Each structure stands twice: as C-alpha cells, then as structure tokens.
Length: 309
Image 1 (cartoon, rainbow, N blue to C red):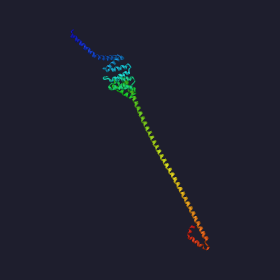
Image 2: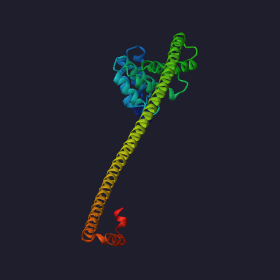
Image 3: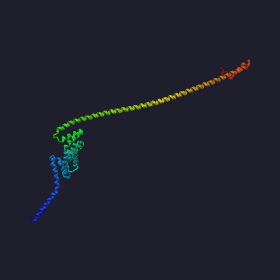
Image 4: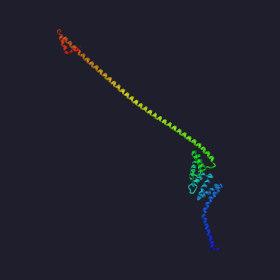
C-alpha cells in the first residue's frame, strides 16, 4: 500500500470519526427516549422514569413529557405527574390536549375535582372532537354535584362517541340525571312559588303596616285637633265665664249704683218734703186765723203743690 492510499484511508477514518462525534448527542438523546419507551411498554414504568427525565432535560422529544407524567402517575407520584404536565404545557410542540387530559386524570385521582374539571375543559377546548375529556369532565362535575352540567357533558360525549362500549351505563346515568333535573326544576318552581307568595304576604304586611301607621297618624292628628278644639273651647268657656262674671259684677255695680242713687234721691226727696212740711208748718204757725187762706194761697202759688201730692 503506498502512502497516497494510506493518506486517503486516514482521511476517510477522520471524517467518519468527526461525523460520529457530531451525531453522538442526537443518538444519545434518541437512545434515552427509546430506552424509556421500551421500558414503559414492558410496564417497567419506575425504571423508565430516569430515561424520560433525561430526554426531557435534553429536549427534542415532546412525547417524553407525556410518558414521564404517566410513569409518575403509575408510581403514585401524583404531584410530580401534575408538575410534569404543567411544565409540558409550556413547551412548544407538545400535545396540549393529551397533557391537559392527563393532568385532569391526576387531579381526579387526588380528589381535586374542581381542578380536574378545569384541566378537562382545557383538553376539550384544544380539540372539540376529543371525546375522553368530555366524559371525564362529566364525572368530575358529577362528583361536585353539578348535576345539570354533568348531564349535558354525558349527552355531548355520546354525540362525540355514539358507539362507546359504556353507552348503556352512560344512558342509565343520563336517565337518572334527567330525573334529578326534573326534580330540580320542580324544586326551583316550588321555591319560586314560595318566594312569590312570601313577597305577596310581605307586601300585604307592609301595606297593612303603612295603613296602620297612617291611621295612627290620623288618630294622633284627630286627637291633636280635638285637644286643640278642647283647649279652644276651654278658653272660650273661661273667657265667657269671665265675661259673664264681669257682666254680673257690672250689673251688680250698676244696680248698686241705682239703689244708692235711688236711696240718695229718696233721702233728698224726704229731706225736701221734711223741709216743705217744716216750712208749711212754720207758715201756719206764724199766721193768724183770719189770714190762713191768704197764706195758703201764697204757698200754693209758690209752687209746692205738686210736691205735696
């Protein structure tokens, strides 16, 4: 072999080594994922975990998140399984509907039915024709006693998967939930009727209370008016009594004045008559018998005649 041939062989071996060196990482990644997948198919899930973790850490195998989450779930490591699904949802190229569906299953196993319902809803939203999350969401809602929403999901599932082998059982559940729905509608109708009756009763009671308050106000106003009228009457009566008393006193005073005036007049008349009698007596006493008529005539002319009568 000449030197040219040896140089060509060395160059070929060098290029082959370089190519192998460049391809080695990809080969190693593929090997770890393939090894994990092989162990998973043999139901050796716990042994597969390190290989899928390696594949996830190195990247390039979106399915590794699904396998790793399933391995954690089968190993009873539910929180790790949920964390893997959550992390995988952020990675480009992963099957979001499957990851969300598996996360819902994990939450359901953890009896966190509210979170399971949310994950199943994400899976169903990712693909409207993806039936499994609809069925599981119906079960999660049933666990939460969301009977009407659960009923709609069971019906939707049979629409998406009409030939499901569990169809008889699902139809039985639907029939039971229809009964629950009817009973719920009747209960709601009865509650509505009771609320309306209570509203009418309360309205009547409020109106009665308003009427009673109005009547009380009217009575109070009437009593106040009566009191005012009574007070006015009392005042009028007092004023009338005062006026009567004043009139009586005035009349008594007037009568007393009249009596006093009459008494004074009578006394004055009596005094005049006494004086006249005295004067007449004196005139008679001083007159002679022959001059009596003359004296009497003079006296009469003097103007006492009318007073003597």
